Image (cartoon, rainbow, N blue to C red; front, side):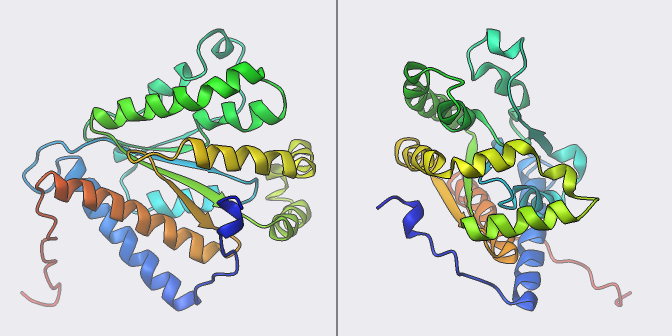
Amino acid sequence: MSRLDQVDLTVTLPKKEAADRLDAAQRRLLYLRLVLGGQLGDHRLGPPLCVVFEGWDASGKGGAIKRLVHPLDPRHVRVAQFAAPTHDEKRHHFLWRFWRVLPGWGGMAVLDRSWYGRVLVERVENFATEEQWSRAYGEIVEFEETLAAEGMILVKFWMHLSPEEQLRRFESRARDPLRSWKLTDEDWRNREKRPGYEAAVADLLDRTDHPRGPWHVVPSDDKRYARVAVAETVCAAVEAELRARGYDLTEPAVPDPDVD
């Protein structure tokens, strides 16, 4: 049984509870981000934070990213999206194009897809040779361990979605003229190849999960649950690292606006 088979896709959150928990996580992340950037606390730069999103088409990556960065000043976070490599990028090692978006100390980056394309779409669609994508698992783990050794907090999400819910979202997008641009012929083709992608995802989760870069598989049939899970998981990862570094994470009291 693969790790995906163990995910409960029926989990949901009531609307009010989801809204309250998301609001609390967003506020906490805002505080933690200011501590990382040296704007709060003892004003030392904290470790870089990189949040990586992978998942099925229409699994809610964009919505989760939007809620994650919503409370943050856009100067304090970079969101980068990756599609197929360009002609020039193909001239280099597949990891080369990702270096320029990685955050430095005090910085934060959110990646909408990432270096895992080598062992997902490039594997399934035969854009990489078997030798290339087989070798990539070790290269990716070494790459992430190098980043972590330098201090990076790495949070990796696989947004998991049932075929039935994916089809419902595809059809909903197709009917909406303001969202139809999100649905491409490639999305439909990928759906038809789901068994091949499921095998690739199972290998990805098994071979690239390591102590410095564990995978968080998020049930995403319920968007509210997924968005809360993402925000709370990022907060927990940042808190754990900062506490290990001796940070005091007690938030300052907010002045009561009704008190002179």
